[in-house]
Length: 177
Image (cartoon, rainbow, N blue to C red):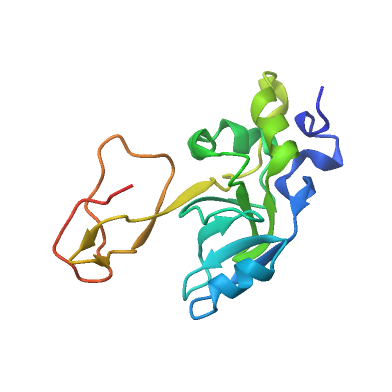
C-alpha cells in the first residue's frame, strides 16, 4: 500500500509529495526571458497572486491549472473532480494559504494518478470541510484579436460553459475552455 493511503504516515498530504522547484512569474515580468533561463517549473500568477498558468522546464505554458491546498490529503485530492483534469506533464500547483509552495508533477504524480485513491473508506474521515482542489482556467475567447484572458475557477470542467465574467469588457460571451 502506498504511504499516502493511511492516516498514520507523514507522506499523506500534498505538501509531503515530491514537489518540483518553481519560480513565480508575475504580470509584467519578461516571461520569455524567465522561461529561457529557467530549469525550474514556472507558475504564472495574476495581479492578485492567483496561479493562472504553469509550465514545466522546456514546455509551453498550460493556461488551465489545478490548484490545491498543501494540507489536502492525497487520497481526498485524487477523489476530487478537479483531478480528472490533471496531467503529470502540467502538474498541480500546491498552495499554503495563498502562497505557492511547489508543483506536484512528474513520476510521483503519475504513480498516484495510476494507483488512484484508497478503496478503504474507514480511514478517510476528515475533521471539518476539506479544501477542494480547483481548476483555474483562462477564457480563450478573443474579439478583433483582443484576447479575453479572464480567469475563473471550476471544481470540474463544465459540460455546458457558463457566461464569462468578461473582465476585459468584450462583447458578452460564453466562457471558452
